[in-house]
Amino acid sequence: MPFIVLAELRAGFAAGKHGRENERVLGLFLNRARVAPLFADEETTFHFARLYGQLRRQGTPIPAHDLWIAALAAQHGALLCTRDAHFQNLPQIPRV
Image 1 (spheres, one colour):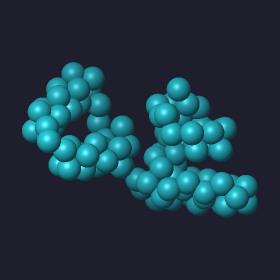
Image 2 (tube, one colour; image 1 turned 180 degrees about the vertical axis):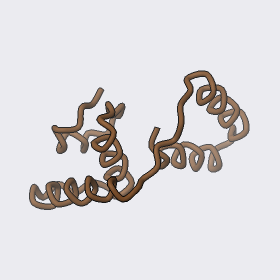
Image 3 (tube, helix red, strand yellow; image 1 turned 90 degrees about the vertical axis):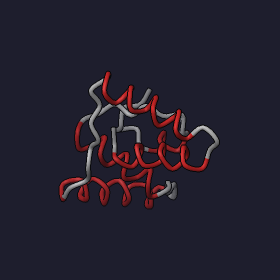
């Protein structure tokens, strides 16, 4: 799971009414599913730049956080699980 996704989940929990319970459930998921955060490194920045350039040329930019998520997916050959429609502008990133 991209570190940004984990941060976005926790930010939502912090802003909501059920933060402690949501954090507990997230902890169970992370432990049971053996999910570890994916962190950006220098290689990720090359994927980020390539995707940024592609989207800019297309005139279809996406939020920076989502661009980092896409760059991590590209780097690791990972499937992107999302309902955000703007990821369709990156057809080379497989989605469900």
